[in-house]
Image (cartoon, rainbow, N blue to C red; front, side, top):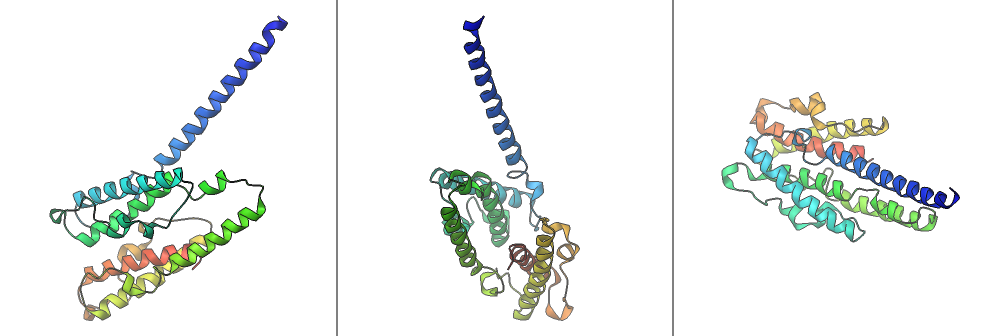
Length: 239
C-alpha cells in the first residue's frame, strides 16, 4: 500500500493541473465571447446592414491580428500607430455606401479586436509584480502614452470627419456633442462603470443646440454623435 502512495499523489497533482488549465481556458473563452464579434454590442451609426457588418468584421479581424502579433512580442501600441486603423478601408466598396461611415465602424471593431487579443493588463501580468520600480516606470510610460494619444482627440475639430454642411453646423454639432459626451463620461468614471453610447437619450436624439437655421438635421445628428463618442471617451479617461 505504501509503495502506491507516491503514484496516487502524482495522479492527483496531474488531475488538478488539468482542471486548473481547463478552468483558465474556459474563463478566457467566456471573456472573449462577451466582446469581439457580437455586433449587437456595437453602436448603430446608420448605413446599410451590409456596410455595417462588412466594416465591423474587417476591422475586428485586422485588430485581432495586430493584437496577437503585439502580444507575442510583449508590447502594446496605440491604435493610431497602425496604417490599417488610420486607413480603415479594408474590404470597402462604394457599393456598400458612405465611406466615412464605413471607416467609423471599422475603427470601433479594430479597437475591440486588438483589446481582445492584447488586453491592457497583459504586460503587467507578464512582468514581475513585486518589482515596484519597474511597475512605476510602466505607469509613467502609460501616462505619457495617454497624453500623446490625447493630441488626436478632444476639441481639435480638424481631426473629425467632414461630411459636408456649413461650418457653423459642423462646429455647433461637434461642440454640443462633445460637451454632453464628456459630461456623461466623467459621471460614469466617478461611478466606476462604462456605458454604451446608445444608452444615452442625448446620443439617441443628437439634437442639442440644433436649429433649422443651421441646415440639415440628420447631418447635424451625425456630427453630434461623433463629438459625443469622443467626448465620452475623454471624460471616462479623466480628460
